[in-house]
Amino acid sequence: MTLLRLSLALATLAVSALHAEDSPRLSFDFSLYAEGKYVFERNCIICHGPRGDGKGEMSKGLTPMPRSFREGMFKFRTTPWEKLPTDDDLRRTIKGGLTGTAMGMFTTLNDHEVDAVIAYVKSFSRRWRKEENYAEPLTFPAAPDWISKAETRAPHVAPGKVLFDNICATCHGPNLDGKGPTAPSLKDIWGMTPVPSDLRQMHLRCGDGPGDIFRVLTTGLNGTPMISYGQVLTEQQRWQIIAYVMSKRVEGPPLLNPSSTSQASK
Ligand code: HEC
Ligand code: HEC
Image (cartoon, rainbow, N blue to C red):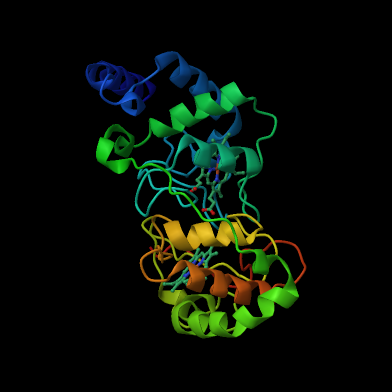
């Protein structure tokens, strides 16, 4: 197994050497890959598995499941829908963790170790070897001044609620608790029933601020039914929905809807 992956890696090295000049991101650094393998085996393999398929020893019963890296699809990004994340996106996930899931914060890894493990994670999927899967990160507007205070947010809450009820409630529920009528029938590309996030909580996986929700609405979460609304909603409408979501927030520890039953479909 390891030998096969090693020879695949060497083949990539040869191929990418040809294209390295026109595309630096397809180039392959073998020593970084080898260091990354070591970091992965010490820190990640227990959940993400030796084959990078998310089936490590600790994965049983976890919701959400540790990500399989074999499809090359990542939820939390600054890049457009369906595109690969940037290294900074992966760095943010690895160093900051994903609140409310088993994916913890790897603050003990130094910058070089994080770069190395990123190179190794990329070796699990061919999507990283095709230029068309890459895109520049999007630029996001600064949050409007009115969004930071409840008083100035107030006039935007009612139009935000109308939009939320029309577009988001079917999955996230009219009470934002993640229990909308279509939630039980959702599927993701990993064959799971993904749980729409409980948007009442202060801490989401994407982050805690209004800009973090704006980013999710703009990019979507690859591989899941949470698509990009960048073409559907104007910027103003996205901020209005966020104003409504913020008006419904309640203090408490982060949850990924523990009371609902998310399970493999097969
Ligand atoms: C204790 C289990 C656990 C360990 C250890 C772990 N992860 Fe994760 N990881 C998860 C889970 C669970 C998810 C899926 C979270 C989700 O889908 O919301 C995840 C998701 C990810 C993602 C996908 C993020 C995205 O945007 O979709 C990356 C990248 C990742 N982990 C990298 C790593 C790396 C690198 C390490 C080791 C340094 C590591 N993980 C160690 C449980 C773990
Ligand atoms: C078709 C169902 C569906 C619709 C419609 C939908 N979502 Fe989602 N949303 C989901 C699912 C499922 C997830 C979790 C995906 C995962 O992690 O696998 C999610 C995740 C999110 C997250 C990420 C939160 C976190 O944990 O970081 C935000 C924010 C969000 N949705 C907001 C919205 C808003 C606002 C709307 C309306 C504009 C909306 N969603 C419409 C299904 C949906």
